[in-house]
Length: 108
Image (cartoon, rainbow, N blue to C red):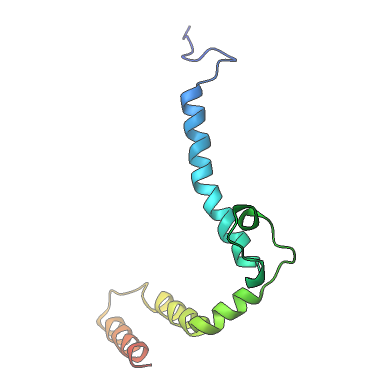
C-alpha cells in the first residue's frame, strides 16, 4: 500500500501563494487592456481608482479608430494571403509564386 505524499486537508502554502501571484501577474494586465480598450478618452484619468474602474458606457469607437489608423484590413489581407500561400513550399513553382506575392506586397 502506497503512502500519499500529501495528507488530506493540508495546504501547501508556498505553492498556493506562488500560483496566486502568477494568476495576478497574468490576469491583471489582461483586465487593464480590456477595460482601457472600451473606455472613451474622456474617461481616462490619472488616478488609480479611475484607471481600474469599469467604463461608464462601453464604447467600440476605439476599435474603429484603430482600424482606420493602422490600415487593419490591408494588413489582415496580407496575413491571410501569406497564410494561404506558404503551407506547401516544397515545389519550385510555389516558391516562385510566393516570391512574386511577397514582391507585390512589398511594392504596395
